[in-house]
Amino acid sequence: MPADSIRSITLSHVVLPLGNPVSDAKVLTGRQKPLTETVLLFVEVATEQGCQGMGFSYSKRAGGKAQYAHLKEVADVAIGQDPADIAKIHESLLWAGASVGRAGVATQAVAALDVALWDLKARRAGLPLAKLLGAHRDSCRVYNTSGGFLQASVAEIKEKASGALETGIGGIKIKVGQPDWRTDLERVAALRDHLGDTPLMVDANQQWDRARARRMCRELEPFDLVWIEEPLDAWDATGHADLSRTFDTPIATGEMLTSVPEHMALLDAGYRGIVQPDAPRIGGITPFLRFATLASYAGLALAPHFAMEIHLHLAAAYPTEPWVEHFEWLNPLFEERIDIHDGRMWVPDRAGLGFTLSDRMRALTVETATFPSA
Image (cartoon, rainbow, N blue to C red; front, side):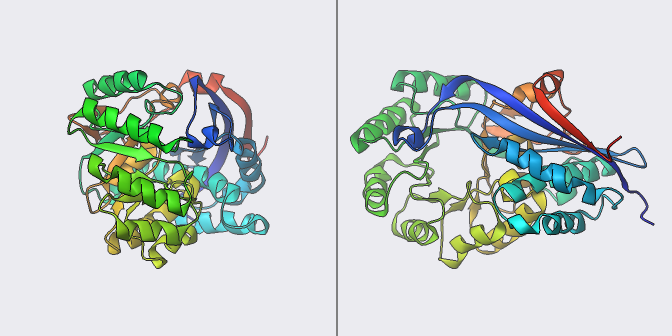
């Protein structure tokens, strides 16, 4: 018998509305509608010895209901297992849902439970997750994205950028990929002039073809950008690799990929840019760490996407200096706030991820399921 075992698992389907709809290049090209909400799958795990853990996954636009439904089908596989055997549990969940594959919705659903188990393990050890993993640093460079969407005017983006910097943020990312590429250059030039030498990134959200991407990367070289993000379709590993070897400005990609093999395609293609794995999308912390080891061995820089509540810990454990993305969108769901100052985001001294769920999260919950069922 294990020293401890999983007694119960509770799933919560949460819909979090945004204060204002936002648009990136995918909206301007007609491929998506403006983003109005984030849908989350929360998992709370409890053990026979009274240990607890919390994790989450998410979806922007479609997919949230599917994540919840999938985990609801397979979560009971983890009941009775030793919560310390995270890799074993992760594999058993994948096998339970093997008929729908090991990428996409399936891995994103499993991710929420995987994160909860890592949170539990660190809480039981009395350590922040970063310390449990083996931290290289107590803080990470941080940049803000939420103020740089395309529906905002240049004046609005400047105002939001200045406000972010005043709160201790260290860098600013803005969206590009407009139908008229000259508008992109005008906006980037205006922000570079406004920010001075503050680190600046741009994100095209996959909306350029290879020819346009090469031209835009060349046009953007003079702006001393930290990186150009997703200039091509996320699954165009060869195209991203070619750009990363051609231009001085680093290329960043990976946030949309939903498995370790999809990320490995970048390395196999000779990619030399910045990798942006997303733990809730790749399947959880367990596969994130597997890929991070390979990325570090390949000498790649790291800048995890979104979900700073999770990624701060993972970035702190990466060997080379990473960036962490700041979004305030999920703040209402947690009681605690992350400390940000001097251009850096600081690892909480609280055990696990360092967060407890708020009353607001409970109020936004539209459906729950508990295993074993009563």
